[in-house]
Length: 207
Image (cartoon, rainbow, N blue to C red; front, side, top):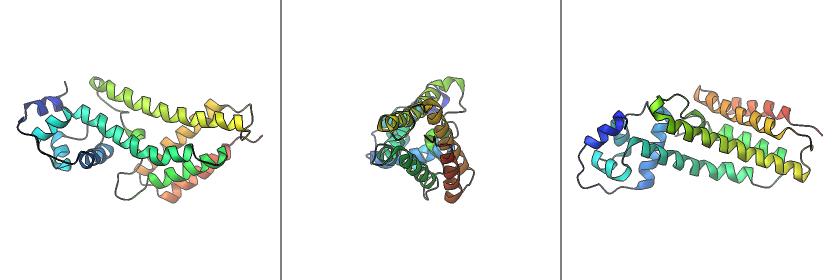
């Protein structure tokens, strides 16, 4: 049990306050996204979520459990645009171009922290939080796997040369996506990230 969890367990366990689950998850997601797991205090969480400590404990049990739900909430939101483009119409090259363009826009949108929550999360954590580190690595690997599957489909459809190094190309684009996320956090503009995407497409295999 982490110190944050112990704090929660010692708080009042009175009648839980009724609240909008999606709204509080959205608030928690934004705070975790902006500050990271360890940089987000319990008091900051309940203030952002506008709930009492007892409501927090009754609804989520621990900071770690809430973080897991916040990550899932983020993945659900992201899959709306990422999945629709990745599995949408068009040849494979056009799909990847649209993904890079959409990432540049999404990573710099107003009203939310810059970058990608999955890209930035769980890379520096205390050893006692390895479960979170593992979960974030699994999410990143899943995204790369989805891109790889789309590239493999491109070979089957004749969009890519049959000798394309699919694993290497998927890893390259995954690195570009993650680098764009960090760039956005460092203040790069949408146009600067779009330019990164355009340069990345120069690595597209020519058959």
